[in-house]
Image (cartoon, rainbow, N blue to C red; front, side):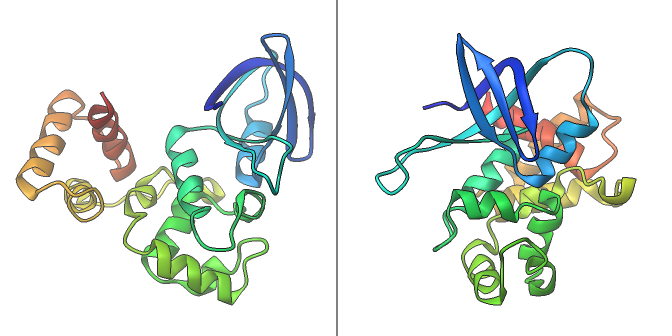
Length: 205
């Protein structure tokens, strides 16, 4: 299974790119939020890299590769496609808002914001909230740059500890120690998402 790809950019058109890796040209579908980020960071070099969600089934025999700029973004997508009747193509098209905005709406049961997603009506929005509420808190802590503004909160340690306890199953003492250890190594962590990313890296080692 393909989970990551780095190679030469051969072609880019609205929402799709072709990457040459190992002598093979791979077509990769980019959700709108990824495509926008890709467009903004285009540089002179032609090497690109993406985390990949790979899909091939009896109903969809042609391999489908969907690309993301970060592993945590990929994880959120793969939670979303677990919701009944939301397959990879629909989920990809639906990602028209930043992941932290969507995750926050799910945690807040904010149906009005969820139906802003392309192709998601009220019934599907209700299903998303029903199946994912309480499971996506950590994604709401990711850096959000909607309209160029990064939202900051005061008690970032408490927010990250709450996510570690309520969403990831750590006990409070363990979670508090994990956060404290990161703050010793990185005392300049200024946002919940930055602090969580450091804790998250530590848990994956």
